[in-house]
Image (cartoon, rainbow, N blue to C red; front, top):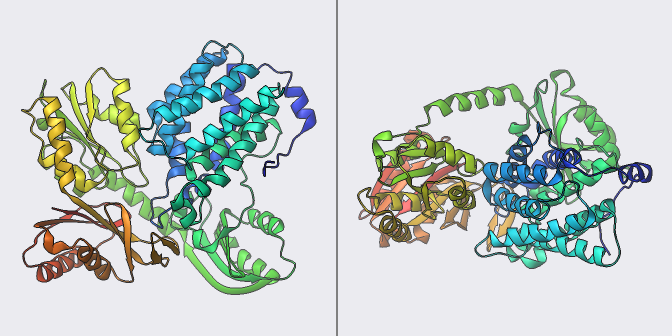
Length: 566
């Protein structure tokens, strides 16, 4: 029996069941699904396995669906199949990150199955989900269970079983799909050890559930702009990305730790907070709660006074959001200085490289090594298929090599070839270090096939490292991590946590071990002072006198250092 509980509105369902589901009706359902997912974007973002500031699955899925919806928003078309195909095309071009690409494949498969249907019928819905499942699985080289793939598979099967058992109306089958997606998401930790260890469910699967549930909520006339009440474990409450949610008129961020009284009512607590502000989050651990909210200037003390009336306040943090807004504006201005092109590195008829770079300093290094175009991207900012196409359009050659330089960009990069007549190859670099190693091997005089093989071989000869800050307290891969600590990643795996930046950096080098290598290239991030970066580089040279150390400004967000070791 499903653990999902719908909130049916019988009268509204009866009325809508008599309505034809044509292309215009489908637009309303898609908009509802998008709105509900957007409302829960941060819920999905927080379902991050590693405690690092790259939780962007919710954002990627929302951006993918926003581009998809824009492709149909102004279409007067009433033919269901044609609208579904336009939606899928928009999703494919706008797909960001692995989750966005797989979601676009789900929409693509569904559209293929219903292409000839002017009005969606029950059989079309069932077949659409079956084709969505098959297309999603085919789009992944090594399908992994316990992910969004599992959720679409179990959803499609549940709908097929219900249809075979006599369920023959679209609304009931949609409810079956939502319930099945919910249950599948809850089972993902049982299928994937890393989810179970981190204490989270699969983020992509959760996003798909919200998309489907939004459609059902619209049918039942339920609100789509107010998230469901939830309390996260305190360790999973990530406030690091809340500055992105600042709304006009919200002047202060207030965080309160408190112990509630015996009559604490979570639903009433949320309703009261909603009258005060936005960006509400609530976490709980060991009997203590943490509340986060954005409020106007004149109401900055209201949450504190309210909580004092229902419990015991333990700790208060208050910050002026306008400072954060100004910092965001400065960052947006800095984008103008991000190098994007070196047309001298592209000649007609010869191979050219389009590389993804997370910071302006790293972008300049790629251009200096011979890249012709840069697509800005990386953690929390995965580029879309359209972003790659836009970069390629500026180049005078039909032979393109793409360096994704991030595991979450790979799938989108592989989709590019299907949208252009150019010969596009993807060198499957998963890190900046691998991308640089591949770039060193680049030679535009080589035939494209041989060059691709040469660059793919070169990327295997480098080790990748990174230092960032933990966004929550957890234990992962045998490493105990406290929120705020520096954590080190070696070849994309968490290897240690430390209280200081130098301790984390030197600890990572010991794990290699650095004495077995000849060259270390360090890129320091946007939040690291240049004098500190040079001091740490000198400390490494002293500790490893036979190791050549190169230091560059990378300008990447979130990561204090990115390392390439050869």
